Image 1: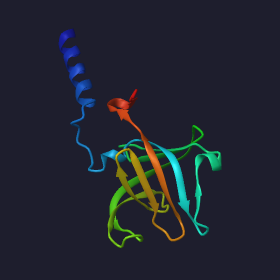
Image 2: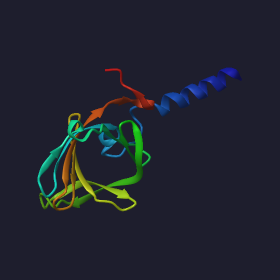
Image 3: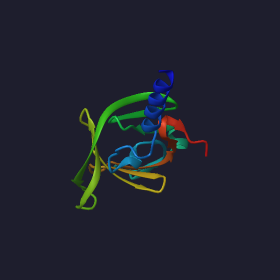
Length: 143
C-alpha cells in the first residue's frame, strides 16, 4: 500500500511541475519583472530606479494576480486579464493587460527577457522591465 501511495504522490508531483501543463498563449508574462525605466508624461521625462530611489518589481502569476513590489515590499495586488484591444499608439490590435479593480490598461510586448508596457492613455508612461526567470514549481532559476 505504501508503494502505491508513493507512486501516486510522485506522479502527481511530476505532473504538477511539468512544462506541458495547459498554459495561456501569453505564458511568458507569468514571471517576476524588474523595472529598468519609465518614460513619458506631459514633460516626456524618464524615471529609473536610480533617479526615483525605488527598486520596483512586478509579478504576474497564472492565477490572474499581479503584485507590485517597491524596495522588496508588496505595495499592490490586483487581478488582471489579457485581451486584444486597439492600441492608441498604433491603432492596431495589441495584447493588453486589464487590471481589476479598474485601472489604466497597458498594452504589452515581450522580446527575449524584456517586457515593454505602454499605458493606454495619452500623456502616460511606457516602461521597460527585465525578467527574473523561474523554473517550474516557483523555484528561482540559479542562472
